Amino acid sequence: MMTAMDSPGAFIREVRRRHDLSQAALARRARTTQKQVSRIERGEISPSVATVARLLAAMGERLELRAVPGMRDNRSDAELRADFRELSATERIAQTSALSRTLTGIASGAGESP
Image 1 (cartoon, rainbow, N blue to C red):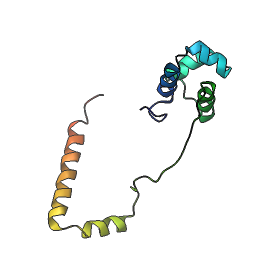
Image 2: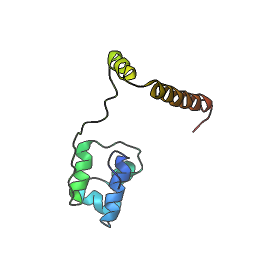
Image 3: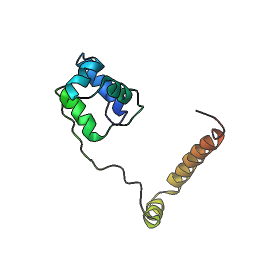
Image 4: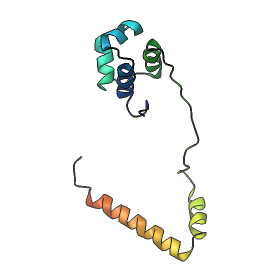
């Protein structure tokens, strides 16, 4: 299932197709132009949350946004040191080895282009 975070344009296109609507039909319902819908779907412009909600409403759907707690990755140095001290020697070595492999992989791909 695609989410609006993947790409707002792709999300709108998926919903539009699920409703079997053309870009022109969606544009009429949302009181905009087919060109504007096309530009959004192709990612040429990034629509506001209000625009996405309006386009979805024109298709009989409702946009729901919510925030959920994520991983906490902004711990202080003291917290990180305390966590590291709690690891056994074997766990410390495994963690250091995994980090080394990751950094080596990043460094070896540094010259590659996407």
